[in-house]
Image 1 (tube, rainbow, N blue to C red):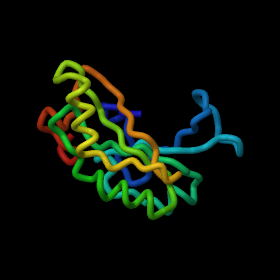
Image 2 (tube, rainbow, N blue to C red):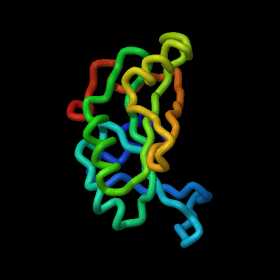
Image 3 (cartoon, rainbow, N blue to C red):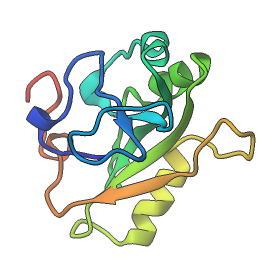
Length: 143
Protein backbone atom coordinates (compact mmCIF):
# COMPACT_ATOMS: atom_id res chain seq x y z
CA UNK A 1 0.00 0.00 0.00
CA UNK A 2 1.11 3.57 -0.58
CA UNK A 3 3.33 3.32 -3.62
CA UNK A 4 4.79 6.70 -4.48
CA UNK A 5 5.76 5.77 -8.00
CA UNK A 6 2.89 6.54 -10.38
CA UNK A 7 3.94 3.73 -12.70
CA UNK A 8 3.31 1.29 -9.82
CA UNK A 9 -0.11 2.68 -9.04
CA UNK A 10 -3.15 2.10 -11.18
CA UNK A 11 -3.90 5.42 -12.82
CA UNK A 12 -7.34 4.46 -13.99
CA UNK A 13 -10.68 4.20 -12.23
CA UNK A 14 -10.08 0.45 -11.82
CA UNK A 15 -7.49 -0.03 -9.07
CA UNK A 16 -5.99 -3.49 -8.72
CA UNK A 17 -7.53 -5.77 -6.11
CA UNK A 18 -5.16 -7.22 -3.54
CA UNK A 19 -5.70 -10.16 -1.24
CA UNK A 20 -5.00 -9.98 2.47
CA UNK A 21 -3.59 -13.48 2.29
CA UNK A 22 -2.06 -13.50 -1.16
CA UNK A 23 1.55 -14.22 -1.88
CA UNK A 24 3.16 -12.65 -4.94
CA UNK A 25 1.54 -13.95 -8.12
CA UNK A 26 -1.11 -15.86 -6.18
CA UNK A 27 -4.62 -15.87 -7.57
CA UNK A 28 -7.57 -15.10 -5.35
CA UNK A 29 -9.48 -17.98 -3.86
CA UNK A 30 -12.75 -18.07 -1.97
CA UNK A 31 -10.85 -18.03 1.35
CA UNK A 32 -9.16 -14.71 0.61
CA UNK A 33 -10.55 -11.24 1.22
CA UNK A 34 -9.85 -8.81 -1.61
CA UNK A 35 -9.17 -5.15 -1.02
CA UNK A 36 -7.81 -2.02 -2.59
CA UNK A 37 -5.41 0.84 -1.91
CA UNK A 38 -6.62 4.00 -3.62
CA UNK A 39 -5.42 7.58 -3.74
CA UNK A 40 -5.84 10.71 -5.84
CA UNK A 41 -4.03 8.86 -8.63
CA UNK A 42 -7.20 6.85 -9.25
CA UNK A 43 -9.58 9.82 -9.21
CA UNK A 44 -13.18 8.67 -9.49
CA UNK A 45 -13.43 4.98 -8.65
CA UNK A 46 -16.19 2.67 -9.86
CA UNK A 47 -16.93 1.33 -6.39
CA UNK A 48 -19.94 -0.78 -7.41
CA UNK A 49 -17.81 -2.39 -10.11
CA UNK A 50 -15.03 -3.00 -7.61
CA UNK A 51 -17.51 -4.67 -5.26
CA UNK A 52 -18.83 -6.80 -8.14
CA UNK A 53 -15.24 -7.86 -8.84
CA UNK A 54 -14.76 -9.01 -5.25
CA UNK A 55 -13.45 -5.97 -3.34
CA UNK A 56 -14.60 -6.04 0.27
CA UNK A 57 -12.26 -3.48 1.84
CA UNK A 58 -10.32 -0.40 0.79
CA UNK A 59 -7.72 1.82 2.36
CA UNK A 60 -7.97 5.33 0.99
CA UNK A 61 -5.12 7.82 1.15
CA UNK A 62 -6.21 10.83 3.17
CA UNK A 63 -2.99 12.69 3.96
CA UNK A 64 0.72 12.86 3.36
CA UNK A 65 3.20 14.31 5.82
CA UNK A 66 1.53 17.21 7.65
CA UNK A 67 0.76 19.43 4.67
CA UNK A 68 -1.10 17.41 2.01
CA UNK A 69 -4.76 16.48 2.21
CA UNK A 70 -6.13 14.40 -0.66
CA UNK A 71 -8.71 16.28 -2.71
CA UNK A 72 -10.41 12.97 -3.59
CA UNK A 73 -10.46 11.40 -0.12
CA UNK A 74 -13.98 12.46 0.91
CA UNK A 75 -15.62 11.27 -2.31
CA UNK A 76 -13.63 8.03 -2.42
CA UNK A 77 -14.37 7.31 1.26
CA UNK A 78 -18.10 7.95 0.81
CA UNK A 79 -18.21 6.04 -2.48
CA UNK A 80 -16.67 2.93 -0.92
CA UNK A 81 -19.19 3.02 1.91
CA UNK A 82 -22.12 3.47 -0.47
CA UNK A 83 -21.01 0.37 -2.39
CA UNK A 84 -20.83 -1.72 0.80
CA UNK A 85 -17.04 -1.78 0.94
CA UNK A 86 -15.48 -1.59 4.41
CA UNK A 87 -13.02 1.30 4.30
CA UNK A 88 -10.34 3.08 6.25
CA UNK A 89 -8.10 6.10 5.86
CA UNK A 90 -4.34 6.02 5.61
CA UNK A 91 -1.56 8.54 5.86
CA UNK A 92 1.57 8.48 3.79
CA UNK A 93 4.10 9.48 6.43
CA UNK A 94 7.35 11.17 5.43
CA UNK A 95 9.61 10.83 8.50
CA UNK A 96 12.15 13.43 7.39
CA UNK A 97 9.44 16.13 7.05
CA UNK A 98 8.00 16.19 10.59
CA UNK A 99 7.50 13.92 13.60
CA UNK A 100 5.27 10.88 13.61
CA UNK A 101 3.07 12.50 16.25
CA UNK A 102 2.54 15.60 14.09
CA UNK A 103 1.68 13.49 11.04
CA UNK A 104 -0.62 11.19 13.02
CA UNK A 105 -2.48 14.22 14.41
CA UNK A 106 -2.83 15.58 10.88
CA UNK A 107 -4.38 12.28 9.73
CA UNK A 108 -6.79 12.23 12.67
CA UNK A 109 -7.93 15.78 11.81
CA UNK A 110 -8.21 15.11 8.07
CA UNK A 111 -8.76 11.39 7.61
CA UNK A 112 -12.29 10.33 8.21
CA UNK A 113 -13.76 9.38 11.53
CA UNK A 114 -13.38 5.93 13.00
CA UNK A 115 -16.32 4.25 14.66
CA UNK A 116 -16.84 0.71 15.88
CA UNK A 117 -19.61 0.19 13.34
CA UNK A 118 -18.21 -2.89 11.57
CA UNK A 119 -17.84 -0.83 8.37
CA UNK A 120 -14.83 1.31 9.21
CA UNK A 121 -11.22 0.13 9.39
CA UNK A 122 -8.77 1.73 11.82
CA UNK A 123 -6.60 4.49 10.41
CA UNK A 124 -3.10 3.43 9.44
CA UNK A 125 0.02 4.79 7.84
CA UNK A 126 2.79 3.85 5.47
CA UNK A 127 6.03 5.72 5.16
CA UNK A 128 8.92 6.70 2.95
CA UNK A 129 11.63 9.31 2.99
CA UNK A 130 10.71 10.10 -0.61
CA UNK A 131 7.57 12.25 -0.85
CA UNK A 132 5.03 11.64 -3.55
CA UNK A 133 4.65 14.18 -6.35
CA UNK A 134 1.93 15.91 -4.28
CA UNK A 135 4.63 17.35 -2.03
CA UNK A 136 6.90 18.24 -4.92
CA UNK A 137 4.33 20.27 -6.82
CA UNK A 138 3.25 17.52 -9.22
CA UNK A 139 -0.27 16.19 -9.40
CA UNK A 140 -1.76 13.06 -10.98
CA UNK A 141 -2.63 15.25 -13.97
CA UNK A 142 0.96 16.45 -14.43
CA UNK A 143 2.92 13.42 -13.26
